[in-house]
Length: 105
Image 1 (cartoon, rainbow, N blue to C red):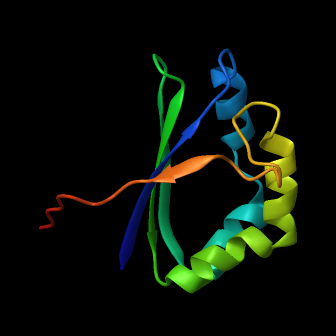
Image 2 (cartoon, rainbow, N blue to C red):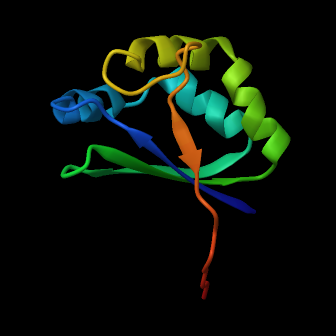
């Protein structure tokens, strides 16, 4: 299993809207993530900084990257672009984090 962590930035004042849009997540987006080997995916919000911390456990890096090419992911990015920092292609601006420590049972 590959563990990925990255940070994104939410626009100020959009905390409630961000959470609303994720509860529930679109069923076709959830299905697409699972079909592409995502075993677990969590997003946490630091309300003081508007920073989003995302953590995912995936089966394969290539399949994870293919999610971005799906129609549902493209629609999701367009839907979310007004409430968070995005790139010109509507993808969220994100910074991947380096794993420096891990412990398991």
